Image (cartoon, rainbow, N blue to C red; front, side):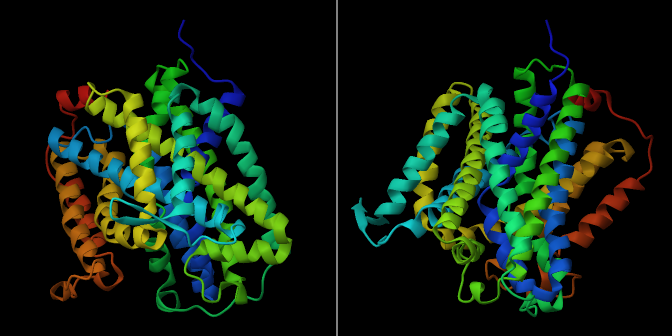
Length: 448
């Protein structure tokens, strides 16, 4: 007999699980440093950051629900597959997933070690021994959780996340009661254009990209729970998205405030994780360090589990001859290897790639909401995404150090958002295209 609804506990578990999937490495290390650099302009920078790190993921999840999980259905099959593979590689073995293990090591374990200088030579490559052992252990645990996707809701939503939430609430309350110092003056780009800088900094969380994937994973989990109706799936996905967005906003605001009031705690730091560590050590000593270690490790672990599960599900569906469990194992090994590149190096490599792909993801979410308003939905989807990709590549090349001064006349080019105006103009143009406003029969069947 088909199950038509979840219990209240299951619904909350679904929302907590979604929140936990998003709350990973970048969510904890970027806001404190952004808050510190923004200083007195923290409010503007925070709104920009919340737009790309909370608002866009929320909209993306709702868009996935609206499209019944087929958000790329109006693109050519080859292009849709290539775009999906690119997203899965970025949030999977290339950047986001390895970063979870790296941050868990840097913030969750390294402060407890007296000496982390020992190295080991493998195939003419030198690795930090402690980091190598930790990342392989971290992804081994993640692999075990991901091998049983049917139990994700129970394992993550009902067990790990409530513990994580309690720890985060404790940290947030302490930040408000025991601020580090007065808010400092803004520095760098945050002094001249904090809103745009905050928006671009939100790219680094990769959450808007992850939403396109997590939405599909959540729908699959709902099916495993007996929820087959697309309409009911959409309702639960939206509820989960709202719970996750609320939790993320709470965490970001408290971490922004921590960074803005960090004062001397943020001197000579290179990432927000160091600000976090310095704060809890000063206020709570060894107990605070254990608390922070627990928060970071749980946050990174739950995100790693979600990413491994989503990527393995996708590659298993794309290459059905290879089992889901094989992909879980092989991706876990790859993530552990990539994690040993180093945190700073991984972040620097990922930024140009994100500048290229993020505009396409944002445009995809927008056109999904406007599909019924386009007279020619297939043409509109493809044209808008092409324009977003073209100018996104320009922004990415600029970030990578390529000289694109010839395009300096474009609005927002200097700020790394050359894609925005052309994409918006293209969307408006598609909305005004003449023709019978209808859904082609084949399109309707595709989205059904």
